[in-house]
View 1: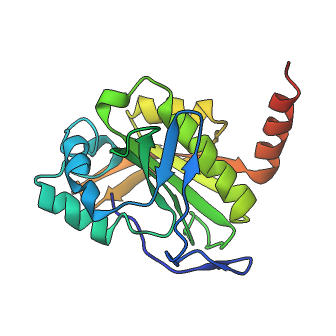
View 2: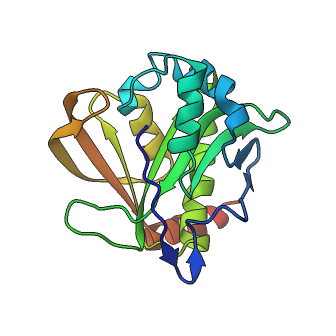
Length: 208
């Protein structure tokens, strides 16, 4: 998973800094910064050929490779390990990729949601739960106006996650380079605006 490490400032907050590492909790999960001690658990799930390739990155080949990924990729400013409450073991990753270029231009108030989850935890609703909290964080804490998310053709699990949490289809890109897999693919791009997110939240809060 190729993730940038840019330092950017949003509404006076330097979100490129790690001095005050943030943690988030949901009903069943804890989202926390990655540590090098997570290398073994990262390898346990990232070595699965059903996890990385469909998202655009090859399976990890060793614990040392996983440790290197933690050092050089997963230390991005808004990248978090997904853990079950009561168990510190990392079972997946979620990130808001900041200062992201979309298909037309670059906007500081737009970002992209990226994620993956270890196969033993599929089907439990963990990914939508973690993603909803990251979306809240993006809009409420980071001052984003738009969050993008995408999936490659054939990744039905990721498509369903994005539909569940309220993303709507925006466009499709053909012949997208996937350098870590040395391939080109078709990518479907979805979008969530702050206005839509707030309207959906108000609607859900009004339900009895």
